Structure formats: C-alpha cells, structure tokens
Amino acid sequence: MKRIVVLIFFTLILFSNLLLKAQEREHPFFIGINPSITVEPYYLKNEMDINIFPIVFQQKICTRVDYRITTILNLGLRQAKNEISHIGVQGSFPIYIFKQKISNTPSKGLYIAPGVGFTRNLIEKHTNFGLWAEPGYSFVFEDLFAITIGVQFGATHFRYDTGVKKWGSHFGIKIIIGQWFS
Image 1: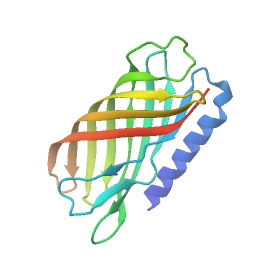
Image 2 (image 1 turned 60 degrees about the vertical axis):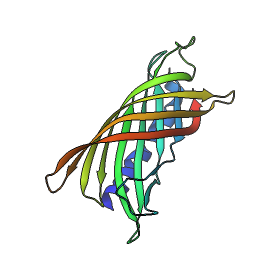
Image 3 (image 1 turned 45 degrees about the horizontal axis):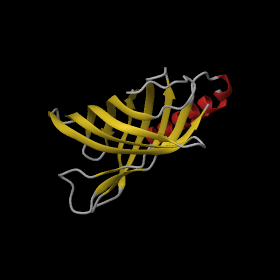
C-alpha cells in the first residue's frame, strides 16, 4: 500500500509541476486519461483488471515526434478477493506521419509509436517488461479537446518471483481522451 501512495504522490507532484510551468513552454502538452480493462486468458470467468489511475501526459518534442507517459494502477477484480493487481508505467514516442505545419500546435493525425512498459503484478507475483508498436490516429478539436485511438502489437517478458521467465504476446487497444494546453 505504501508503494501505491508513493506512486500517486510523485505522479501528482510531476503533473502539478508541469501544469504550473505551462507559461514557460514552447511546445504544447496533453493531459488525459486512458481508461483500460485487462482480461488475461488464465483469469477465471468475470475476472479482470481495471486501471483506476490511468493518467496520460504527452508533450510535443518537435513537429513530428511526441513523448507519452501513462500510469498504471490496476484494481484486480477476482472471485476470491478484489485488490491492487498491477503498478507500473508505459512510455512511448508517437511519430506523426504527416509533418505539422506549425511546431507549437497540438499533435494530430496518423502516427506510429514504439512503446515500452514496466509493471509489477502483485497478485501473480511477477515483473513485466513489454515492447510494442502502436499505430493510431489523434483527433484534435477546435477547443483542443482530443481523442486518440491506437492498437498495440508486441511482446511482454514475464519474470516470476519463483525464477521462471517467459515471453508472451501483447495486444492492446488504446483510447485516450483529454485536453491539449499550449
């Protein structure tokens, strides 16, 4: 539980600091949420994980490339007991196919993003390291509200506390909603 409180505390400090420095920024940034549900093949019927702290921060680096960070704090809904199942973070670099004409405008359009994720599964007792490619599309509206839809294809390495190590496939659907700030 201490780890969860510390993760939330540092995440809030990071995002607060970024928002307070908005006036000094040359590049726009995005704050949003990435609601997600995970269902693994080995889960029992009606078992799932729900990300209860799905904060997304994205910032434009240049006219074609951004970086994106997403927090993971999953609540595992299990038949025996509901508890925190995963703690972690994902990072990616959306590379927009069509160059933006103005560098200080929000990123939008078709992109491909290499990504990496690190999580700790507290229920099944393993650490995960994932790699993927994420093609997607970012829609930005006049009021700078945005919706991003992407699909992740890749692999995840599982390292169990027992010493067992294995690779598995990774597939994820990303739906991110939020607001751009400049």
